[in-house]
Picture 1 (cartoon, rainbow, N blue to C red):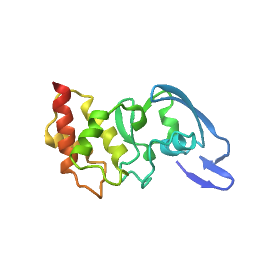
Picture 2: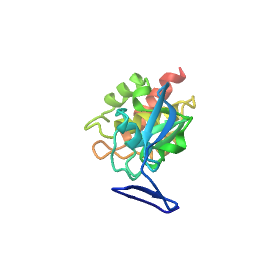
Picture 3: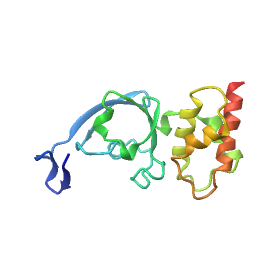
Picture 4: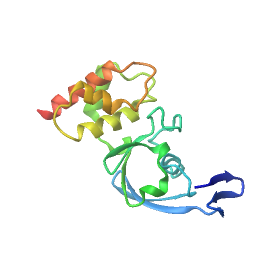
Length: 169
């Protein structure tokens, strides 16, 4: 589908679209109306609406800092077209109550600059929502889309394993 942006609007299938569209969805349990250009990413639309808990990073789907849950599935918000999530429930790091996970991450030395933390929290919670205690390989796979340049990954895996064991009782 030919799409090009410019000062005059967006060219989509031969028609210039200058007007914003409205996308109605749930964000962290609250109905939200996003007003955005048709080609806007979910990340850009959320942030433009003042919902800034999800950080922007590479905006190419490489770093995972913008990870959110769309109907329970972990995705990079920078790669999702905002219009495709109409009617969905989006959970951001702001909507996840994860004090046990955040404390375990701190205990295991995984919090330094904090840039990657929101993405790791969301990806970890997506895995932990399945219940039980995942294997280390399952934790590594769940976190594979998130990059950290400060601490490495051993502490992150241990933090998720620790919380999984605690929650499993």
